[in-house]
Length: 151
Image (cartoon, rainbow, N blue to C red; front, side, top):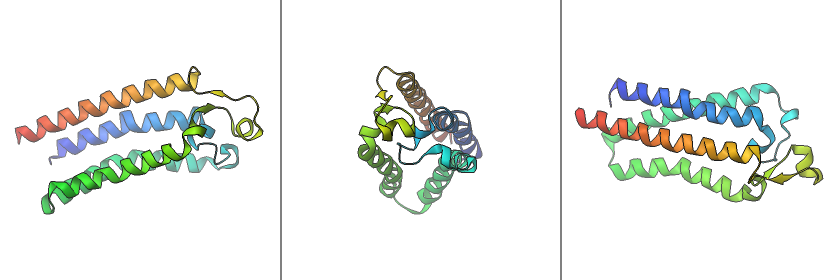
């Protein structure tokens, strides 16, 4: 892959993926942790570290995949891509009931002041961010495919 392809992936990570992850950590931190951790008890460096890890994960995965593409068959690369997707879907499946609630940590565990995610401002944010992420991912994949065809 060319350096232009890597630049495109870095831009996707910095302009789309990291801001989406950062939004939820900034405006719905307890929901971001699926009410497993009290965000008020965590140092702010944890949130910053998570944002940086999120931002670095996309280019790191791209570099790993493009390096492995030279030495391994495409089936192996596809399996490599499914590993983080599977882990993410597994986490969502395990915490789906928690993620369907809009509340703070205290509200969730005290069973007061909670509301369903559907119809809440957080729910609309989730839908909007998923739409932005899906369209930006499709555009980035399309652009990478065009770059590869030109080479």
